[in-house]
Amino acid sequence: RRRQKGSRESMKQVLVISSAETPQNKQIVADFVDNLNKRSQDIYKCVDIHYDDIGFEFGDQIRVFSLVSGADIASYDFVYFKSYIRYEERALALAVVLKKFGVPFVCSEVEYGLSTSKLSQYALLAVNDVPLPKTLFIPCKRLPQSYDTFASALNVPFVLKATDGKGGEANYLIANREEFGSAVAKHSGVEFVGQSFIANSGDLRVLVVNGSIRLIIGRARKDDSTHLNNTSQGANAKLIDVHELSEEAKILSLKAAQILKREIAGVDVMFEEGTDKPYILEVNASPQVGSGAFTEEKLSVYHNFI
Image (cartoon, one colour):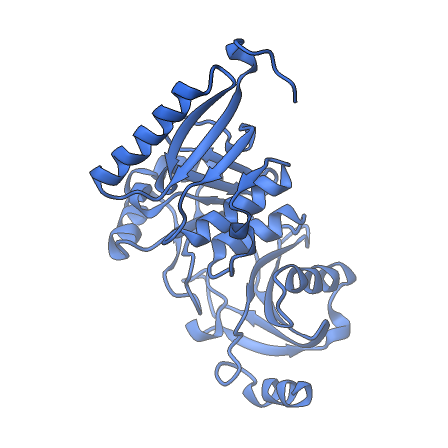
């Protein structure tokens, strides 16, 4: 876009993202940005932000925003990932969203990172229109003071779960401020996402192998003392005939696995009570092959594939 030189309203807005931790390194970044602005001649305006000051929202809308200023990061004209070591997961999630909204960025390698947690997984699914429960991510350094933000965005109760949790570990149904504080304090330094609670009577683990659905396990919690349907948390399980799965859920399961480029995946699907709307909860890269329910049936599927 052509802009008039000297017009502050027409200056390009540039965001520099840094992983600087020490006061010395933070000052280096601040000086770098300041020196760029001195040379810009009102062509562009640079600001910097740390990864710990970036929040993510997925669901009906996709939003990445500054937790300091509230600015929508997709509103910038250009984003420079100055550094991303130690923050590769957040960099990948952000790059996926920037690409969705057509915002140029460097270095482009960040968008080809390996998805290692729920954060980047949700980003990839969201930008490809896969239905998710409304999701909010705020970095763990800001979590203790973030209850009101989660409650306002997701309503109460909401689910709070570790981004790298497996088998229902570090997964809580939060009904009030005290429960939130207790869960966060119990897992200091752990990254969490919050999600709207979807009323349900259970969920499905859909085993996708090489582009086909080979096995479906229906999972249902034993009672309402928990919200977890994981068999590792004591839920009941039964085999579901593949032909019983709705066409919409089949398409979503296969699409979710394809988006994550996982030829072998355990796709968790939940249906909302009252509407039967399917939501994708997770795409597991290693879906309990040698443990959990129906190990013989799962091993048979893998044996035939190999």
